[in-house]
Length: 512
Image 1: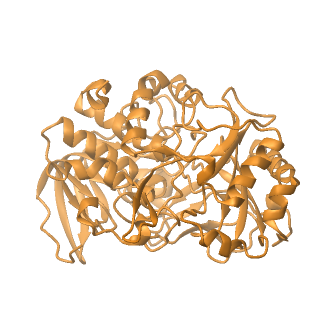
Image 2: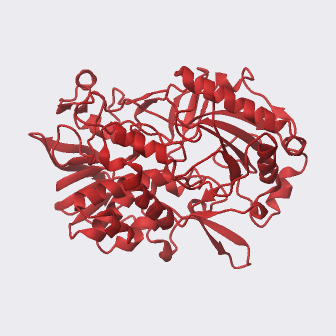
Image 3: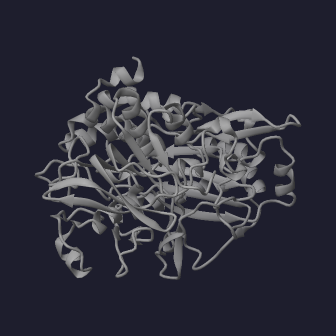
């Protein structure tokens, strides 16, 4: 990666803001199926094509969750004691470049629910081929039980003993309850000594490397503001190397993620009029939903010291990622979908969670209803917005989390898992519901919905209500959070919006 900045073009057909999962998929589809000039602006660095070998080892390694490119965002803890980290990756590829690699297409019910809310382009039958396509582009594979570490095998066996069916097909739209090795976006390679290396196959590799000759990708190029005049998006202001420049565009597509997409709209005068006025920002469009409806898969957490010698035992293995298993269950308040609880284990170096003991078990509310906000502080800092998740404020979520905790406790009582876990490590009050944690899946802050929905920010094709030529194409548009990990659905969102804007059939993209 060079520190020399190539000049940006003065004008392009489409500017894409954000090279994470949604932006990468959008750019890849648009560049493949149109002759448009496309500029992708990414706030973090672009380490080049995978084949060039310029990516940092920590960002490639699927064994751990790196923090070297983190935004350092936080929210208030539910306990009120300090702040909770909100890991987000500032790098081309976005959070797909530093995540735990769990890949899920979610459930058919979720997309049909979106469509039923007035968004016909998001029905399950329409998006299913795109979900399969992004699944393949991420090179998703399934672990086998033989590939799991001893703690992870014990976790699966304990889940089966607690009543969950064993499952090794946890990446289909026909989702169901079950527990087993999780599907992952990991590509196996070996190092010079023959030791197995798993590469986290991120969205930059999946969607952008093939179109680098048909689009311009500019790393370390954060956007300060979108230029909207007379109700039309005209271009963007960008800061590179300490100097600000302007790029005119026929279309502006925001894909900066569920925290930064609404922050950028707010900084550009698009959002709740009273909030903008209080910040001294001229109101371009009064859209009350911008930065509202913040969702995430909230979790309860149990920590354990691990049995004596566990870390050394895991480290001696040829393959020992911290995360490799997931279980799914229905709560007593589950909707018409197949499950609404996740249980999973992080065991080993506990990467991405400095200071935690070797083993943590989590139970997640996968149809979370608690809503938070993203706003700008008085300094109007787009990079570090004010984020209040308000985990656990919906009573239904607390019911789901309580039942997830009960399932974990039943699993912990199984002798095989209990022997691996060792002593419980208790912090705070000892009640996990007093300090709910995050699954790092923010969504919903630029909600998808028809103009008749007063909380909606974008329409069926991702167009921002009230602004011509401005679109959002990332997880922020989810009207309800998908019940699986959101990486694959977010890629589908980018691809679906690009397909609509390019006016190409989904079959043209997928080859089906």
